Image (cartoon, rainbow, N blue to C red; front, top):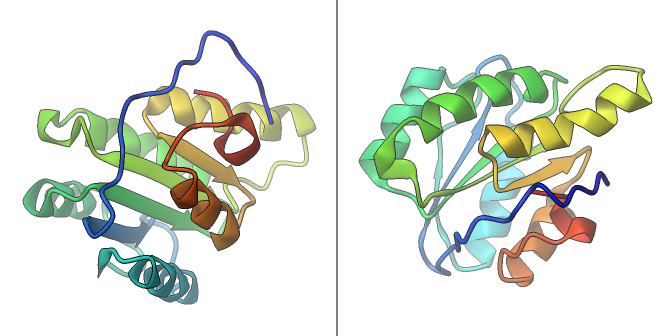
Length: 160
């Protein structure tokens, strides 16, 4: 993971039993990853709203504003999580009512063969507004993040 002293964690937490929205990025048509995340989060005691695949940015923003979730989980398995994630988190963070919402992204975020680019992507996603980035990670990383009390630690979620 990339380390940076200039990236500081945000003081956001997820309330067990709170509402969590799971979604893909707009270009991602995969569904089983969302079903799996939904089941994992429900088992952990969260109320889950699964928006499904190919969710347009505007719909994701509107649903987050309307439902006021404690956390948004964005999953990508098509390799466009980095570019789509940067775009949508910027729109989400532009809404003052979502300031305290924890936002995480994970999965196959990019397809670049450049190690430098792959290493840079999580830091870019943090700077854009995500609270945790699980590059190439699976649901086990999200589970550890939840069990750790949603603290940003290098071994779980990288720098902020």
